[in-house]
Amino acid sequence: MKRTLTLLACLLGVGTGLAVTRVPGTSTSYSAQRDPITDANTGLISIDEVNDTYGETALTIRCSDRDRPDLWATLISTHDLFSEDQVLFGMKPAITIRWGDDPPVVLRDSDLISVVNSREDLQTRQIGVQGPVVRRIVNGLSAGKRLVARVNRVSGGQALTYTFPGVGFATARPPVTAGGATGAPKFTQWYFTTCRDAVSGAARAGLVAGRAHLCDLVIEMMPNGAQPVAAEFRYELEYRENGRAGKLTLPGAAQAPAFGRRGTG
Image (cartoon, rainbow, N blue to C red):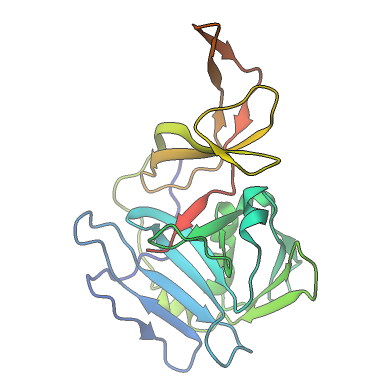
């Protein structure tokens, strides 16, 4: 996998402090920092929404998922964007974005991810964006184009429209040269954790035959400075019948669920 300059877009002049610097005369702020143990770049660039006078709505480009290098974005709203039940059943808001006068782009389900805080609490007023579209967001903002995002929530109601100016983004994101270790992401292990009955919502340690379940898939990986685009997984189902253990290979391959969770710290 080739590493591009765009993937390095938020590699700021890295420091260890937590100070946030405002680009003078703009709605853009940035924080240049790194993890003191892993040296991972944990910097970010944030743009305030033009119509939110309270500063509670923003678009943030992040350089890491907690202490793991990873380029992704977060849309932070003053309104709930979804509910916990909607996340449980894989229901996501419909989001359309547009850079300047460019044609609008409808984000795919696989582009959207939920966000949790350091206590693993779901942030219902935040939605994460991952994958190649983040690089397009960075490129558009770097060119000084404003970004408009329209959010249609699953629950209905009036659509939310947010505008983020690109002025100051290139200043917060000085030019850099590619370097450091590169390579394809390495998946170290993957496993299911909590499984819930699709009808009652009851959590179970195992599965009950004949009933549909929704299970959390945990994927651990080493990014190696790159963003994975897709992954396929094949599964085996282990079971016990009449006191005897058995194993069943499930047919077909599944794409890695895109609506995973990203941590904000």
